[in-house]
Length: 340
Ligand code: GLU
Image (tube, rainbow, N blue to C red; front, side, top):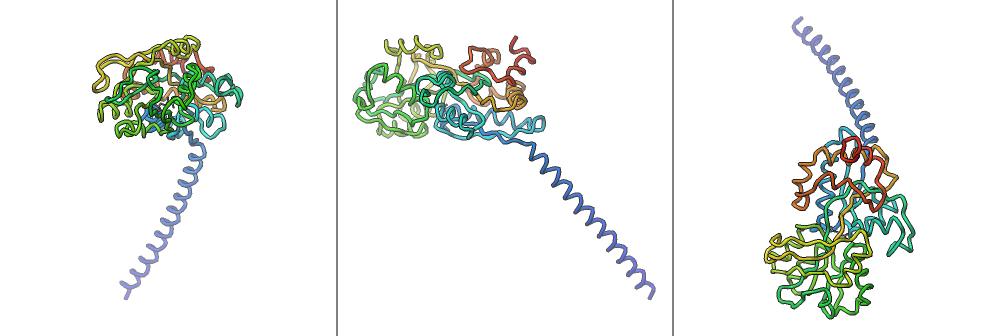
């Protein structure tokens, strides 16, 4: 009988204990949720505009975001990449506030900042700020192996992929065409292909030439040379020389021979730098944390893409800047001794 009593008392005690356990768990749950929510409120999501997935902007942006996200505990920033049409689109979308960060060709960053060239109608965007300089980009012409194209002038009457509006290559091609006094109608066909579509279009015989302003080695160039033996074409005539000489952000470059299948010779062309940029609206501590994440994990960064293999931090922080340096980036460069 009193065994039954004991069991009843035991059960009641258990019930009381369980009630406390459950109440504590419930309270703890709320506490965790509440702290989680406040941590989330501090976590700012920054979007980084890149380019097509077979270019180098996209993996470069991915590498930067990865390093930023790895150190999130220190600064609370979350970084996400977005595939875009390229330089011009990134500059426009950072201006409109749609993107926080972007990568652009130095030449177009300069003109967006000053409101010159194709940015004249929009006016100057004096909020643009340089975070760091990435790697060299090359105005790259790739022709089908069975074509007789040996120079830019041989493009007259050919089927050319001119790039989507918003891409750096389309904008640069238009500058070059103006210099030459050509129009798009001088090509037999001018196709506005996405960067990632170009290599297969070239190999399928839908176009004779693809144009891409890109770092090397790049996925698209690898695809076009490996899949169907496409040839890199020199871009170094007198009109190009005049464009290069008039613009401090252009320079002569050579795509090294042997980098791609079937292209053992160096290919001379013109190029510029890829620049990682933001707006002055990006808070100073955020810019500081982002460049710090890259430079304090630099060996890791260099290993994330073959186009970064030869990068030197000293070169990446130096001017001349196409847009002024962001104060947060400058503070880190000076504190770390990268800039005197
Ligand atoms: N330079 C190209 C552009 O501005 C993008 C190159 C890339 O995606 O790597 O559109």
